[in-house]
Length: 514
Image (cartoon, rainbow, N blue to C red; front, top):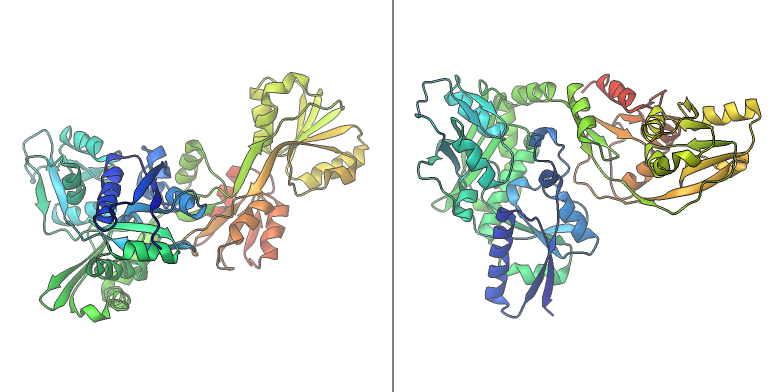
C-alpha cells in the first residue's frame, strides 16, 4: 500500500524549497492524491554564514540535521543537492531517488568593472575545486571566500571583480545574470546539478519513489561519487568528475589539482554503462598512479588536522582551533536538559562542567562562600556571573576528592549532571541534579579521522553506540576518566589533558602526526 501522506525535512533557503518542490511535483504526477508536510530544518551551514565551508567541519554541513530528523521519525525524507551529500550514508538511510540531471556546468559572473583577464583580478568563490581550476588557467588572479544563499552570492559577486557559482542553481532560481559565462572547460563537482532524495530504509518508501528515480542519472552520479570517495577527497579538495553519454557508451573525465592549481592529475576514459558499480574505483586508481597520489599527499599535509569533536563548539573555539591548524567537526552527542533545583544548605559547593556552572549563574548570591570547580571554565563563568567567594580549581574529580578526604571537609553539595563519572554520594557529598545528560546516539557517515576529541565517558558511549571507528584513531580526552572509557572500547592511542582545559586538548592534537 502506497503511503498517502509524507513529511519532508526541508532547509528553508529558496534553492532548497525549489528543489523540494520539484520532487513533490514529480511525485504528484504519479500519485495525485498524495499530501506532504514540510518540516523546516536549520543546518550547520545555514546557521554559520561566515566560516568557510572547508573550515566549518564536514559532518554533513548541509545534510546532517535533515538526516537526524528522518532517523528520529520526525520526517520521512529530505531533498539535497547530491554534490553536497556525503559519499557514505548513515546507517538506516538510503537513496530513494534522483531526478534527471538538468545541468552541471559552473558559471562565471563578471563584476562591476571592465572584464580584463590579463589584470590581477580578485574573484569570489567558496569552492577549492573552482579556485584551483581557474588559477591553473589564470595564475595571476586571487580568490576570496563566498558564503550566503545564491541571491546573496550573486549580489556580492556583482560588487567585486567577479566570481564563480553553479549554473544549475542559478537556472532553478531564475536569476541568471545577463553577462554570465558558462565554463565549459571546468570539470564540475561529482554529481553537480543532481537532485537526490534521501530517506529511511523502508520498503514502502522505496516503492513509492521508484517511479520518479532516473536510473541513468543515478548510475552516472554513482560513478562520479565513487571516484571521489576512492581518491579520498572530501569537499575541501580540488577534485572534479563528470560522466556524459557518448553514443552507446559513457565518457568520463576526472581531475585532481593542488590548491594553487599548479599541479594537476587528469583522466579521460570511455566506459561501459554496465560497469557503473565498480569503474569509479578503477578510474580513481589510475588517476592516483598518474600523479594524483603525490597531489593528494600534499593536500593532506597542507590541510588542518581533521578532528571529530564530541561536543558543539563556539565560533570562538572554532577560530582558536583553526589558528592551531585544527579543523573541528563538532558533533552533538548528548542532550543537556536543565532541571529545576534548589540551592542546598552546605559549607562548600562543587561544579563539574561549564554547563553546570551556567545553571548556577543566576543564583551565585545563594552559593556558599567557598567552592570547587573541575576545570577553569566553570570558575570563569561563575565569576563573570557575579560570584564573589573563594573558588579552587582541580584538573580532575579524583584530585578534588583526594583533597576533600585529606582536609576532612564536610557539608558539601555537587551541582551538575545526573550522570557523572563519580558516585558523589559515596563520598558523603550531596548530589543535586541541575541538568540531565542523555546520549543522543548519533549516526555519522565517516570512520576515518586524524583524531577524536572526547569530553566525557557518556559522550564516547553515545558515539560508539551505532558507529564503527578505527581503534587506531588517536583519542585526546579531557581527563583520565574519559581516557579510561576510550581504552575500554579498544582504542590504542589515547592521551588526556592533565588540566582538563580545552586549549590543552588542542595542544595535544597538534602533536599528533597525520
